[in-house]
Image 1 (cartoon, rainbow, N blue to C red):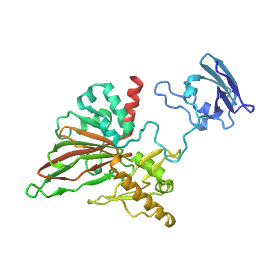
Image 2 (image 1 turned 180 degrees about the vertical axis):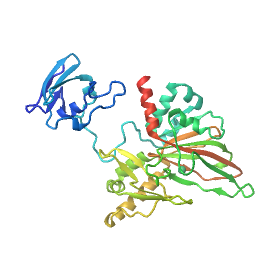
Image 3 (image 1 turned 135 degrees about the vertical axis):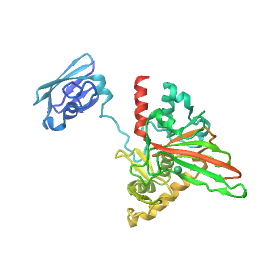
Image 4 (image 1 turned 180 degrees about the horizontal axis):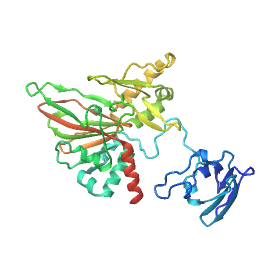
Amino acid sequence: MTEVSVSENSDILKVGTKRFHAIWLRDNAQDATTRDAGNSQRLITLADLPADITISKAEVEGDTLMLTFAPENKAIPYSIRWLMANAYDVTHEGSLGHPPEHAEPWGSGLQEAVPSAPLDALKNYEATRLSWLDAVRRYGFAKVTDMQGTPEELFEIVAVFGFVRETNYGRHFEVRTEVNPVNLAYTGLGLQAHTDNPYRDPQPTLQVLACLENSAEGGENMVVDGFACALRLKEEDPEGFAALCQHSARFAYTGSEGVALHSRRPMIELSPEGTLQAIRFNARSIAPLTDVPFDAMEAYYRAYRRLSDIIDSPEMEVTFKLAPGEAFIVDNTRVLHARKGYSGEGTRWLQGCYADKDGLLSTLAALEATL
Ligand code: FE2
């Protein structure tokens, strides 16, 4: 039987080795007067609870703990199993810069095991959908294969987990190049690995790129795990890592009429607990850095340059050439994407769109709850 005790001044409950505050317990009650039985939304606000709340009685009956709160004199049942699953009296990872719970940092080793699924299986089989969505959460990147290679098919991928995020570029955008056939020396420029649209706030959290034509030589796609790069920077230069986290960068896009997008966000964003939240890295849309104090600018630029070098390191990248009918998705808050240079005769036609990660994670969590 679980040992339960109440502190001397009745404000803390101890269940086994875990402690709970009286106000936390009352605020998180799961009974029908506190939470709606149907949608589990809360029916009260904190103002409905007395500030000087204490526990006047604690009784165990099987897996149920019956707590009585004073001065309300209200008895509420708690599942001990629920309490243990939601205990906060645990050791929290508090280091400055650690990956989120489900994220697994990767480098070029992932090349041999790129997560991938055929579109039909994604649409029709929950188990395939679950493991593909889980891969996106784990690696921030996955491929889709066996599509028709027809326009707007990328919307079918998004429909598997959520909704398109429309921007001033439209519901989707075209990435299309005809390589000059009369001059074979012509080389399509490569693009350094980047996250898309850091000048938006919030930035688009997912990007899908689908290939319709790819007959030019080169033009491979490349992805890099921004979290793995940030962790490597932290290891090599903790002061520089802190500089990129603690000061806002500036990003801007004013490239078309009527559009003036500006953001003020760090290149490496941490949660208050020190968890890696987001990477923003885009050489083409960075704006003058005016939030870095004079005395910190040298360290900032040193770290920015080092992060850029790490991002460009071959051991961090996974490279693949998309065939028509193939697509990939990236978590745009974490994984950078790039295009290698291309040349020779041929056409390269990709379609891209943005979507939201909260929808993807919601679909995944709901699937996990049912399967
Ligand atoms: Fe891009």
